[in-house]
Length: 147
Image 1: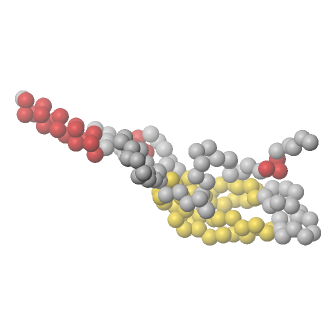
Image 2 (image 1 turned 60 degrees about the horizontal axis):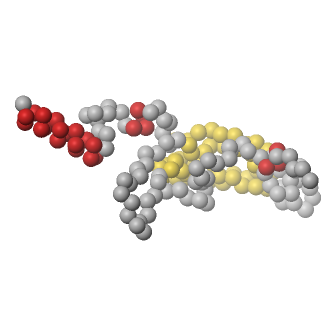
Image 3 (image 1 turned 90 degrees about the horizontal axis):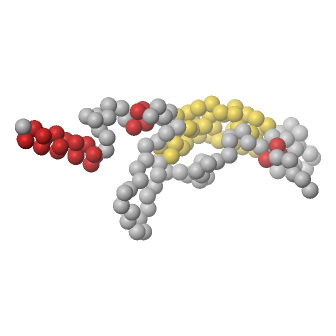
């Protein structure tokens, strides 16, 4: 009996040490909490250009979803901890031409279109890595300014 209890305790300790494994948690943590995985989604984004009066919504694909991350319990000074985020693996740029820009303003703007996604370090040149970012369809021209 003591050997059986000892064996169960050993397996539980291994499970806790290695993370919640299939013996005590049948689903991966993301599936257990019903979080969508990192994947391509269709999204409407607002394009705007300085000097042009209006924003224009376009339909594109972006990366969105959950990536499993770990935060170490013991923090080691001067060591870097990188949290993985859902970000672009492959993408291309599409060009849009604003129809209502005044003369003298270049009416073109380019925006990324995601082809594939992965969980990796956040690349600031292609991703918004903030905790709470603006909605993709947010437009600065929609904010009233009072003088």
